[in-house]
Length: 64
Image (cartoon, rainbow, N blue to C red; front, side, top):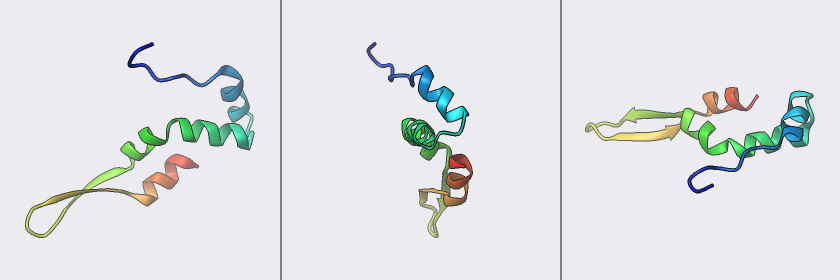
């Protein structure tokens, strides 16, 4: 399984869909890096330098 990440088990996904808090937290933790990547925006600084930051509003949307 080299290069592949571990998948969430069926029971966790089923519980998350049913609204179980523990399962939802596990799913969010599993996808945390991907969610951060989707929430990242580039901001051009004075002088032309580009800075990457996490848009907190977008992050909150993905986590709810």
